[in-house]
Length: 113
Image (cartoon, rainbow, N blue to C red; front, side, top):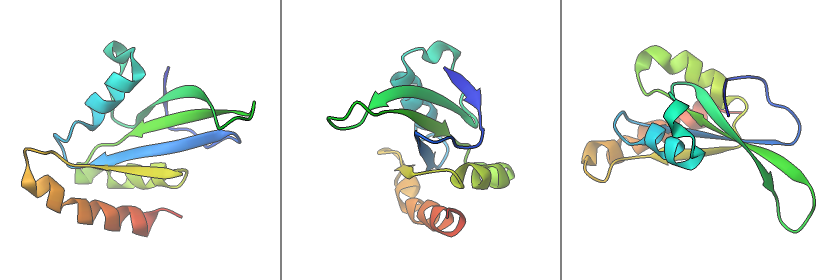
């Protein structure tokens, strides 16, 4: 299921994926979503019900895709406000994307609560 960014509800775990362009962020979500044919990325999310530990307590895992273009920095910041966990991506074939992880870490650290 894909939806636009919305406020966080109780029982949700938000994971936001960030990194340079061409680091396969959207591809990662398409593969995880299994229905990736419809998944377009760019500030959409995939939601999945999950069970945490041995309890019967169910949560909703929401995986958010972001765009690394500077034009979208403000939209990324909105996504960061509800994020519980960040996944910083880099390409194994692009050394600069690995070095840029420091910049992504700084952005996330500065803009997330």
